[in-house]
Amino acid sequence: MFVRYFIKEGFNIKESPLKSEGITNSIRKQLFELSEEGFKDFSQLLIPGGNSFIGVRMPDLRILAKKIANDDWREYLNSKPKYFEEIMLQGMAIGYAKADIDEILPLVKDFITKINNWAVCDCFCGGLKITKKHKNLMWEFIKPYLSSNKEFYIRFGVVMMLCYYIEPEYLERIFEALNKINSKDYYARMSSAWLISNCFIKFPEQTMHFLKNNKLDDKTYNKALQKITESRRIDDETKKWIRSLKRINVLKVK
Image (cartoon, rainbow, N blue to C red; front, side, top):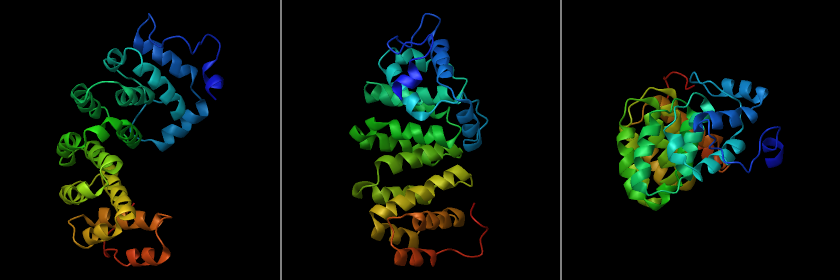
């Protein structure tokens, strides 16, 4: 796979991606070398947000992001992304970068303003492994985003909780944060439902108590129930009981 994508005419994987014509043009050229027209069309249908796609698969983006992180990643983060894949690369580079948390957090804050779809948001959150070493600090960092009125600011905070904080010490804080989220935006609601379902899988008793006593809007609440019943890790009897908790007389949850 590595050879098939990277050993092409005029392309040498041993070369640094930071060429003399400028970082942005150099990386963009390599992205187009890796593009697949069919995958570009598929991505445009799957990921809304008005993005321009090149059509590069995620494993190849990760390989390139790691190379960027081993070179002058700071300079690349200063470049202006034009395509979906370039935004993804910048987010991945932040995750792979070897730097102190004090340097990373301002980069995270800046990158969040570039998020305009679920794919960039979720990939970015999943790559911020530095969170594991700075749990309390990062928790305080994400809290303001949970009270935002912006769809993907909220989703960022929620997905960060999903990735790193579903554990006993933070469980009640997660439920408290969910109760305070006030958004009618689809991707914010979906992330909350996704988080609740994962909490239920790991901590069913505590999450059931939350489901019986919460301030969630009806659509988010019912979507969370649906997500729980879709899990293969939940037995049929529990799923039946979960379905009985659905709030009626509300519009169908999309």
